[in-house]
Amino acid sequence: MLLDGTKVIAGATNTVHGSDLVAGVIYREPEYDWYGVGDRTIDLTFSFAAERGFETLDIGGGHSYKHHWAPQQGERWSFTICPTGRRVGNWLIRQQGSLRRKARRVLGRAQ
Image (spheres, rainbow, N blue to C red):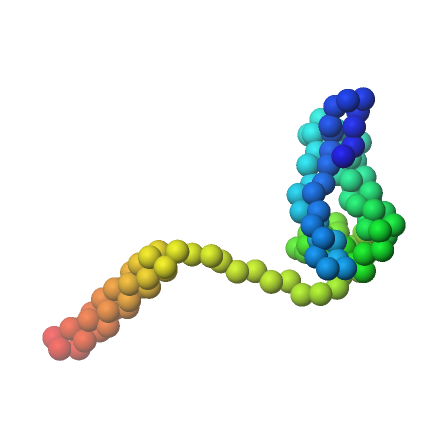
């Protein structure tokens, strides 16, 4: 955490995964953004990881500003979690549209 007196102005949560430190959520008070407290929090997280001997610090991917701290390594994965009912319902809706298009083609040829 970063403090201004007793007020928390920024902080970060991290998870230890074996010999890796994985960044979680970075928080900052918007009125302190001008001072770069988000960047400072990430800097401190890198220092913490190095001092404690972690092999890597995973700060996630997808944002160009992150290359300022270290070279990219690893893979980026994404997935969607969808309840079975919704997945089946969406599949049925797609099938219905497909069947309508096929029926129009067949009926159009018969006329």
